[in-house]
Length: 382
Image (cartoon, rainbow, N blue to C red):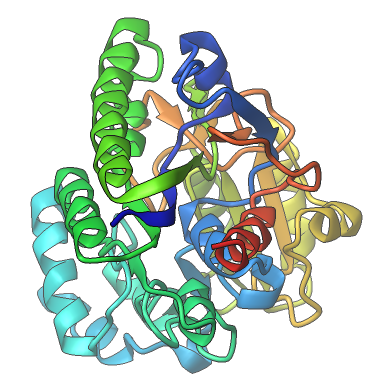
């Protein structure tokens, strides 16, 4: 006998509203759709927001790294940094990848962990935000996440393992349906990686979307074998902004004579620089340097609007956001610009996320954080 309902939420990283519109993505199968304001920041801030309904100010995740010498778990590693020579070898992507895997095991991190291009000698000043797997029980500490909420409601549910490939997660979702699960949160991340390279190639993007559409059709058909009604919703966290230029903020700051860790601290993300002022005078010097670059320091009102204002200034005493399309190169994230990047102003036309469904959507969904409330409502309707 068929079950009455199956609820499926499919997360597609970087499926922006502009791309959905340009490619008419699943316009027949999922006709109910809305433009959604992205969570300021990157996937490191958007994913915990989606999984909890809380803002970065509440859950504490903005960039992957933050300047926090007193709580850095990497102090011993930094003391050994002198053995990591030559720098050119340890900065290679493949070497960094394997070193990240080793450190993740040593430190017992279960969340997403990558060193990217963070200088090894700087690690003693840095803490890392995603030490725990955000998708599992108690994965966000005192903040109930989706797993905690579904468990409390005694729902027979399935949440994807983010370590797996998209294909593996689609197959796991189909098996979950066969095994009686009636609420599924399916995670896919490869579209984001593709767009970083191919965002300006219409045909390449179209080809990727066709593959996704086929996987969605297969998953939905599988659900229809087991349930009378299948509510299928696609959600995303942000879009992708094409490259418009690059600036060397790190180089200019380093030439100022200010000493990192003594006069100032900083996290140089791909699209923003987060500064911590440690000595009098450093703010004035840095502000003068930053006035030469295309962008602006976020006001208190903007931080409040974007859900990133914290009185403890954990995210930085000042956050400089670059204009849309301009990337920091080199940064703590990479040594070369990418063809596409996210993490710019949420108002930028390329930044908007999207939600698509085969049933009408509630009017209150305006921001990425609103997905959580919607998922909980759909659980209660099962």
